[in-house]
Length: 319
Ligand SMILES: [Zn+2]
Image 1 (tube, rainbow, N blue to C red):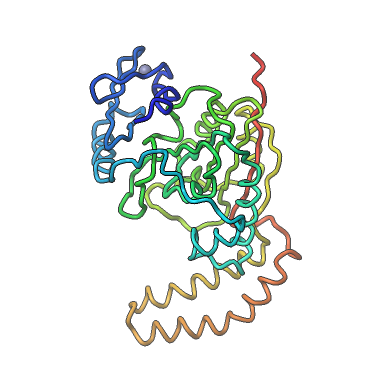
Image 2: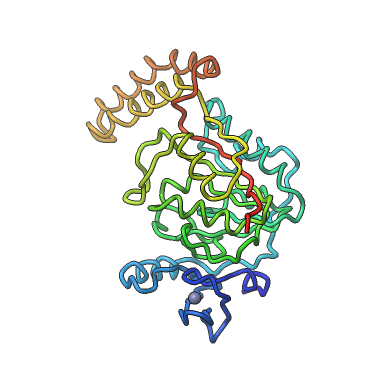
């Protein structure tokens, strides 16, 4: 593991410095010892919770070793939005307003992150944005549970978003993209995000308002823009903007379409003629509505978006 990364780390329980002892990282203050598996430290605050920790240990052991940090991704030709839809998220249809919005926001975020700035991607999952941030000093963390559904092989540090094992004021930028709904105490995660940012550092977050339950049972919250505002301000951020991903009408049509696609197949079975017929029929019936809603999205109110995109600046602390 590289020295630069170790220098940045701290104990997730007491925030004191950690040092290598044998093949584990140990805290000089509280004497906790954290394992490193495949070059990836497991710095989580729940060593005492045996069942939970064992499960995490097992998930982390199934991952391939962490790639060395100098295998930085290929440079992009500048067409970030194109790359986003062609390569990173091929499953996202860019005609859908929420994905078009996300493509724009990611492009803006990448442009905002200057050469060499340090970025902490919290709950980074498959580290999709690492490729776009090849010019920055990018570090990723995630709690690598549910690894059968996600490929966590690029994660640098196994960590809990509500006890981030990095020292205070270590990063210029923090990313928290569709993560807060999965954290039992999201306000702690926002506190932590503020703590690891330098004063003036920027947080980018994507937070759902209208999304079906997912990654069960690790799905705990949905947020309104007022809840987001309050949570970020209470943690020492100045909220620069909170934008809805799409208009109200599109959310309704999107879910009508989604349910019509999945429900007949769920009810009658994937291979049943009846299920497939109903699936196609609904698709045809809804098509004009989908066409119209995509085009007219902006003329409807945005109090019912699927996601909020948040940009917030870490205020210098008063003390
Ligand atoms: Zn400690």
